[in-house]
Length: 169
View 1 (cartoon, rainbow, N blue to C red):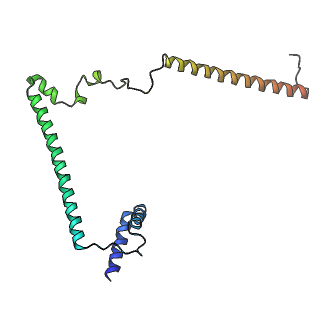
View 2 (view 1 turned 135 degrees about the horizontal axis):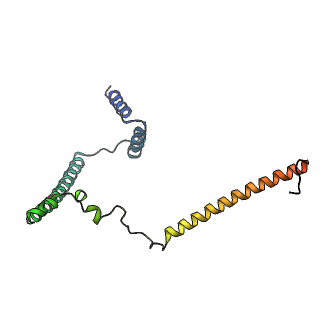
View 3 (view 1 turned 90 degrees about the horizontal axis):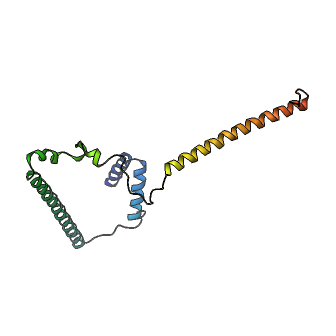
């Protein structure tokens, strides 16, 4: 009865997660525990206690690291505030304003600022591109004119073959 209730609970949870997530969960379970024919490893109380001890130790170390990082950030913020407080009153307001909101921000960091590239800039690149585009457009126009002239020539030849047009013109 308990196993059936557990499987019903599991099926409901999987339905909530969605088909893709359920498939992924099933694949992970299979990778971790196999197809269910193999028994799960049984841990002794000593092993479980040791694993719990390691887990708690890891959590403590990570929390210490997080607290140390937060303390560093607080120290940096305190130093920044002390530096702003040391400025003349007229500059303090500007120092507290985010850089994007300053009126001179676009002058110092323009939107179209040249950014570093992997290769050096090509001299007269835009002029070369414009010349190449103009040449392509001229070639396309000439090809269109040639196609129209060929079409007219074929039409004249067909009419002449049919005897409808004087070929002396």
